[in-house]
Image 1 (tube, rainbow, N blue to C red):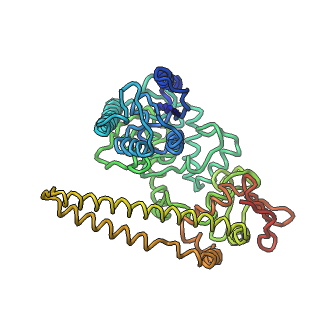
Image 2: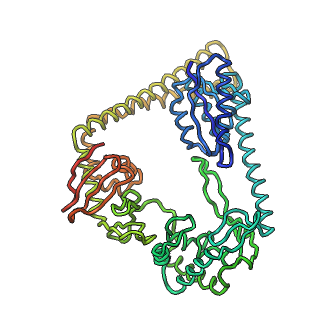
Image 3: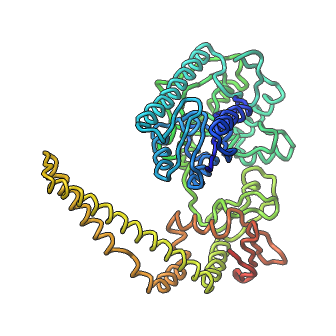
Length: 499
């Protein structure tokens, strides 16, 4: 008997001991049943509404190793009714029993599907109810003029839900507003703050985004109306993405905003605020106000500055540059020509993938995929033929119902589709595999630049951090974990490369 136990708690406000409480129940249950000590999987401070929890994903991946998975109750596995149903179905299909030691769930028991559905629905309704009650309580605080969450820079807590101006930080806020109205950009402002060693809201260096913010969302020092003595609450809400379970921000209509006036919290006067808001809106229209786009360039989010280890971003149409120099002014500002970095890195990858051992690995992976695909098609054909045989056996036995004809037609259609899938097996592509491989390599740069999936595959090869620097006039790039090392003089020349 191979046994696993999974435990989870939702937020930082809960106790770490909650995990041990759950695991103790699971261990005691295993002991009563005469089973061995469970293998433990846990997730701390992660909502059960999310399905990308690391411990949960490891549990599902390892599930075929186990006969039984113990949880304190089904909500520990998931609070999403759909995910809870899918998970228990996958585990049951793999021959794994799921037992809730506190709520009595047992997928080895007849009728467990209805129980899983009901318990999953109850868990989801609990979250909906908790969310509504929390929002209702915060709404009351906001209408009373109290803080409904978050303490902006420039203030401190004076009493429960109450704030007062923190004068040392308020002076910095006034400095930011004055410099912005004098014509300085947020980047120039934060460069001065960092040069003067002014602590940021988080105690580190300042970033331009903390100053500029977002007028539409009312965040950032220049865009937050609290500095003019006006609190705006309920601008947005967070909803769970149906696929990932992650929270996604959605803007609320202005009719739902809760606005209260607090002249005692004003750090800048109304005229200064209005002038700053006008300039911010003009700049937002000039730049299009777009945000949140996926990476637009091959190496965005991959390159790291060899001077400060900060991220490299596109600073103009020709160059990648250090983001710390651009956003914070804390680096001398390394720049790398986009053409040299992109074409050189892709050439090194192409050279490595052209090696015989790389193609051999690719060939093995394709053949394994074809075997799996062919096996799946054959399995579906066997199931379809069995279904058809069962219907025909019922007809021969004289069991005729109003749905018999429809069942027979459906079974015959399933057989035809499965036979077509078997005949369409891609195995005959293997003889031309070398040709296809070389064609992809010849257009590697085009594939990566056109396809986000291909760019993601490049990240799998070179890693998520490629540090660049100059040595004796040559551009040197080194990937993390010794995945890649190459030198660029007149174009990149691969020095060493290993997958």
